[in-house]
Length: 199
Image (cartoon, rainbow, N blue to C red; front, side, top):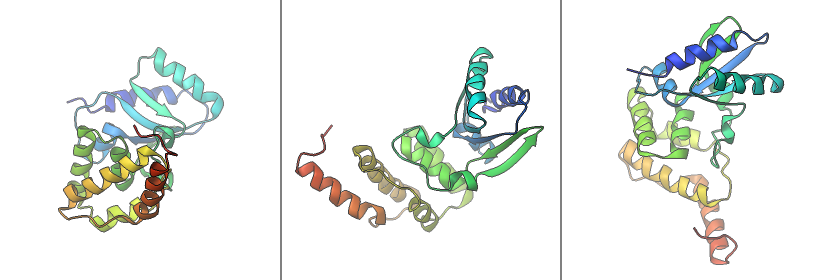
């Protein structure tokens, strides 16, 4: 079963040729491998801590070596929904190979990375992580409070998705999450005044 670790090994071999310490924070399907709940995936999603000047060289080398990887200096920039504050510090150590340290995104942060995109596969990934690690509704909501939501339509959709997911994952009728109150009132006021374009 392809779990993306083959591509990760290729990427690490490439990074070991660099003369600086490099850290990868793995998320996506490869993170599931490190959580011991692998599924078929062929690519790597990761944040890389590397000097700016080497970053572009690495991206070029990834392409030249046909490594299937989506790496960035800041995975928090991948969408409109930010990750919970402090996700980098919470990433768990997996192993170190010479100058390359591999970490995996914390399980609770992983849930919100999945809910930000919200495909059926993402929802299933998140549900499996909750089940595997007995994550509670309180754990979930405490981490949710660390997300600094932007005032945008995408955020409104994310809040609805989180409420629906909470009900599905924990079998409860979710109370209004605290972050929603002021944001939703403000957004609805802006929509009613025509300041935000409806899609």
